[in-house]
Image 1: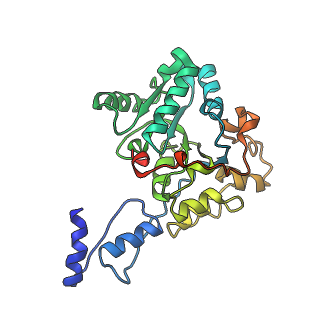
Image 2: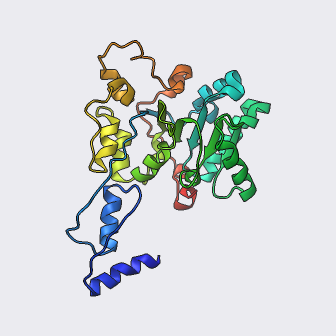
Image 3: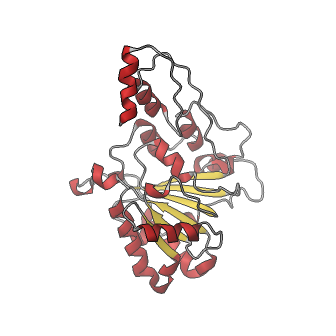
Length: 289
């Protein structure tokens, strides 16, 4: 990239520089500082916290089928049809995106009209049609299966649930993706569903988030941005870990649950997943959007 040449110039000519970027975690900031020959620089990092989004993480066995993993969603679409709350599902590759869409189409039949797919290789006419529908709160599309191509520069309305089917490679991508939920400032939920085979090539921040079972999930995310969650946050509205520890005894304390847990089937849970297969490793081309 041409801008990386600026670092070479600064190594020869000492001059001040102001570097402004979107969401950038610790490792990304270190890389940029190195690239631009910035030493002992002053950082101003804005807190990216989205307090209205409750966070969930769930690990499942890699042998569980897509139809079983998304049984809850198939059930909701069949039950609610065009009244179903809007879901945005992020997949780590076009291949996974297509496989999930195909699985949903097999199960839903004519109701697949409420599901669509968005990635970098989608025809421009399809992309525009999807964007137009998603700009309307009561649009026909109730579930959008997408890659990171749908994470930036789009205006999707009424996204109550974001699902990451497999963790993004870095924390920046994760924050940008689940941040698509709750743009109306209403209560929203984001869940990361993953199996062990999907956890290769993650950066340290993302590995910490995925493997964590005790610390507030919001704390882990914000620590990557030199930030902390509000001390006044309501535990049962924060994340699944904080909800377990919540002792507020309010009437809705146990009601803020992701639909995944309301309709899941027993084979979902997994404490370990060591049956790795080289064919399941995502290479750089598969991860691209």
